[in-house]
Image (cartoon, rainbow, N blue to C red; front, top):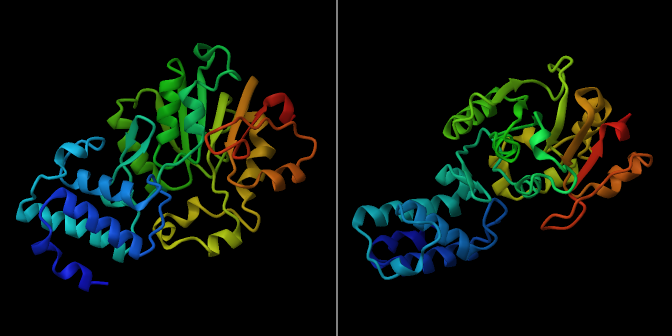
Length: 300
């Protein structure tokens, strides 16, 4: 593999040259794209533009720009690391996006990707009719703090508790909360799910927990192995964390409170396990099987 990189620094001069080279190398290496980009071209463009400190959405004006020697070395380095170490792009750039929001990330947290983000963009309408009446939100398994930050923007009168079992993840979340100047509204709590929340109750609980089943964890592409194992797998069927939350969520919801959870591809097995729970499955960009909603009374 390294032979493809040995002469690159002397033979590739423009952004166009490096873009073509990166796409070729990514395709040749059969990289997996599941952390922000969907294909080799988009990922190559993003990594090159980021490395050159150019706007991430404006490639065309710079295609024929020639790179300096130092810039060529930097671009070569990030392309080579992506190929040879299979590091997700977000960890190479320490940047991940959910909609128009960007977050600092490193290997202490999973790369943000959640369909709940889409629902928060619309303030969970129509299920929440009066967003201004949401005054307390819990984000379980907060990781980088991304959903807590989105919730704070969606519900401007809400205080948000952001919980994670990992102290290392909470350090990343603390940085992101500070970047958005939300220290007064988002409170970070180290807890194993709901264990340390006492009698706290919330108008809304959101949660993107670990939900990958054991067989899928064993078959994950190499890129995912850079992410914390704690944040991916959850027992044999992927629902260990979900079972605990469903058992205890009602006591942490206000009278009209609502639980919103993401569970990956586990809709069928979840509904089979809880035939009496009236799950609502809102439509997101990938379909209607990835996020469920339940009201407090449903859980009782």
